[in-house]
Length: 412
Ligand SMILES: *Cc1c(COP(=O)(O)O)cnc(C)c1O
Image (tube, protein in one colour):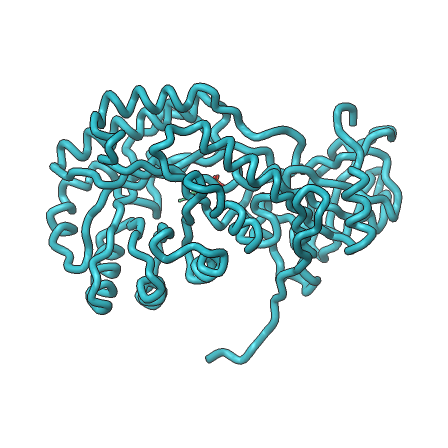
């Protein structure tokens, strides 16, 4: 495994102290990613942290701070709202998204001060309006737009095709008069989120250019002045493999140019601009440490069995995407083997027939860049194993050690 680093001595110490499977998140790295992304964007942009990437309270709190370059919160459930509030965000700092918002959750969100919702259908806007009226308030709705044609290629494409997300852009003219009449709601602007994990800066820039141009065209055609334009994200980070965050040296200038062209008043806050990120902000901050429980050979094939499987690091599996992860451990001969977890299902595979160092029971392995889509994106409840311990550090200092707990209680 040339080029990969050994399990860092600090990590080995933490594993010895707290056991495995163990997630380690470094807040210094989270802060560095936040600064880097803020610097890559024109300063007029607000940056929303998508809590689904990692809702650990210490991580969320770290992203909120940072003076006027701190993040706001993009949330999609009352559970995420509770975490955001506990981390010091106000309801007003939150953008509430999702295609299936119920009246009950909207009621709770509005009660707790959320005033901006991304909406995906006429029913959605009506529902937000009804709940807002019940609270005697008017709330902002962004219309999430599913563009008829998208420009970049990406690993996760969410527009340009039929989708539960957003209004099909070609239908907006038909539905807007109706949306404008919904009491309790102000149609404040557009929300786009057409791609995730863009493959390079050029495709991200192309997507943003397309988005800004489309937003300007729609605003003009629909005679809908935009107070807010959220252009989404797509900022990249490696997932369970070595590597570094995406690098966006040209983004700031490219965004400035396209905004100057289509929204001459943008520097004066018309519209207010926003974008979103999950994985870029937290992905590289995390490492998953696991221990080899057993190594076995079956019909000539080797299986390395870890104490961490898709119950611990299952984001890719749970989200229908294939691993493999990569294990950092060098100074050893490499061989081909399958890296599997401890669960009683043949689906518990982190990597099938991948290149691994020669491993023995008791060895510690480190899966790098596991700070996003970790425990909460995994099959935590499946087969009843405890959730992994999560230790938060700031450099050498241990900030907190905790684990999620799933337990049955009487339903109300
Ligand atoms: C998931 C999601 C994000 C974060 O995506 P990343 O690829 O982790 O940056 C941002 N915005 C919305 C609306 C999302 O659904």
